[in-house]
Amino acid sequence: MEQDKLDNIDLQLLDHLQRNASLSNVALAEKVNVSPPTCLRRVKRLMEGGWIERQVAVLNPDRLAATLGQGLTALVEVSLDRQGTEHLDAFETRAVAHEAVQQCWRVSPGPDFMLVLQARDMPHYLSISQALFTQDANVRNVKAFFATKRAKFGTQIAF
Image 1 (cartoon, rainbow, N blue to C red):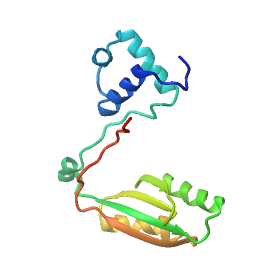
Image 2 (cartoon, rainbow, N blue to C red):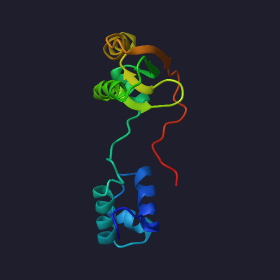
Image 3 (cartoon, rainbow, N blue to C red):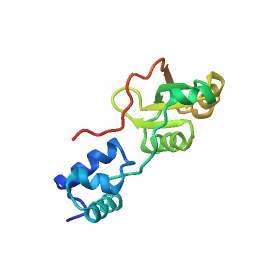
Image 4 (cartoon, rainbow, N blue to C red):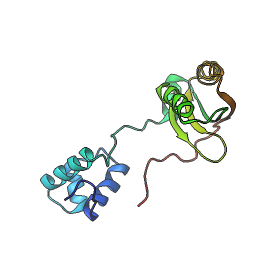
């Protein structure tokens, strides 16, 4: 099979893996009705072909709160004064390099970027905002929204 083509088995594998990447190869093979060696070979091809970016553990922030403190999630709109490619690229490079930035999206229309930040508390958010927004003369406007409840969080792509 070509690297850039997906068949029904591949789509089933991707669907199961994005819901539970910890499935054993044998269990995954059973779910899509292929042999374990075939399943392993296909999953390896999907990873090498870039269809699967990475496999991670999604942590439960409510369970971690008792140990680490509640934390603060901010959704932040960022607008730049100059939107030339070099200016957009420079801000994006700084944003994605910052450990508190969980997601960075270039968007249009409206602000230039939407960021999802995770901070320990408000003083930590202040230091993040100074590093990312205050010190950059090209940042024109920042509008932050602070999450009060996580009603849904998912990573699945529907297909």
